[in-house]
Image (cartoon, rainbow, N blue to C red; front, side, top):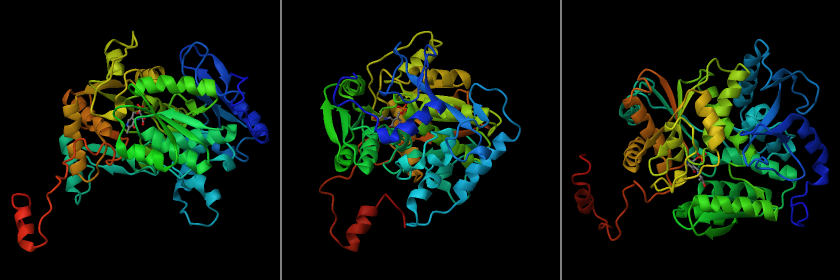
Length: 485
Ligand code: F0G
C-alpha cells in the first residue's frame, strides 16, 4: 500500500497537529481489543484480525480546555473510573453556553461555526482538533418533536396522532432529515471530511444507496476535494443521485446491491489510497454521536427510557449508543437509555443474530422497500451488538407493510420522513404492543432521512393528464368527496 504514488500522504504542515492528535486518540479493535494510533502514516479502517475499529479519546475536562490539545491536564478517559464530582454539570454548562450564543452572519463566520454546529458544539467529546481544520455547513440542530398523547402541545392535533398510533404518552421524534443534505449522514461526514482535510487526502469515497453519497459529495465539494461514490445498480433514489451529481461527485454504478458496493469500495480505498468515508471509518461514528448529545441537551439532560432507530449498516446504533455511554461516564446523565434497533424483516441480519443470543453473526440477501436499510451484511455489527448488550436493548423487525403504515402516520402529521425512517415508528408500535416498551415510558425515536427521498414509495402520486380547467366549477368538482368546506 505504501508504495503506491497516489497513496494518502499526510501534508507535512499538518504533521505537528497529527503528532499531538496521536497523544489523545487511538483506535481499538472491537473484536480483539488491539490498539492502533489514532492517525498513522496510512488510514486504517480495520484491525489486522479484520475487526472494525473504535475511536478512543482522552477527554479533556471542560474547565481545563484552553488550549484544546494541551497535554498533561487532568483528564477523564473512558478507562478511568474516578469521575470528579460536578464534572457532568461543567459539561452541561459548557454546551448550554455554546448553544445559547446566537449566530450573526457574516461576521467572523469561521470562528462561530464550531459553536453553531450541532456536532462541533460537543467537540471535546467528538474530536479534539484545532478549529481551522473543521469542515462544517454547519449541521445538526435538528428538531425534536413532542408527539406523545401527553407531551404534545394542544394546538398540534396532527402531531399527536403519532402518539395515539404508538400508544405512548411521552414520545419525541428527532428529525435528522433536517440536516443540510437531508439525513443524519451530515453529522458523521463533517467529522470524516475534517479528518480527510487534516490528513491531506487527495480524494474521498463511499458506497451508498443515496444519503451517504449526497452528504459526502457536499462536504467534499466544500473542501474542493474529488469525491467518488459507488452506487448499487438498483434501488438508488433518483433525487439523491441528482444531489451527488450536482455537488460534482464522480458516480460509479456497481452491479449488485449495497453490500457488493461496500465490499468494492473498501478494496478501492485500500488499493488506490482514497480516503474511505462509509461508517466503517471510525471518525464518522464520532460525529454521529452528536445526535445523542444533542437530544439529551434538548431534553434538558434527562435521559429518556428508550431510544428507537432504524438499523441498516449499524453505524448510527453504534454512534448513539456510544454517546449515551460517554454522557453517562462523564456524569451528564444519570442513567443509560435502552436502545431499540429496528430492521426491515427482509433485511434483518442483526435481528436474527439478536434472536440467536448473538451467538452467531447472520447475513441475508436483503430485500425491502426501505432502500436505506436494505443491507444484508452490516459492517457495524460488533459495535452495535455491544450497544444493545450494554444498554439492555432490543432488536426488532417490521414488515414493509408496517413501515408504510407508520410512514403514512408520520407524513400526515406534517412531519414526514423517508421509508427507512418510518421503521422507527413501526418498531415503537410493535414494541409497545408487545409490552416491551411500557406506555408510561419516555421514548425518543430517530427519523433518519427526509421525506423527499424515495418519494415514489408510500406517497400518493399525482396522475398525469389530471389538470382541471381554470374555473371555480371545476375546482368544486375536484374537491367533491375530498374536503367539505
Ligand atoms: N436511515 C437512513 C435515512 C439512511 O440513509 C441509512 C443508511 C440508515 C437509516 C441506516 O443507518 O447504516 O447507520 O444503520 N444509509 C446508507 C446510505 C446505506 O448509503 O446512505 P445505519
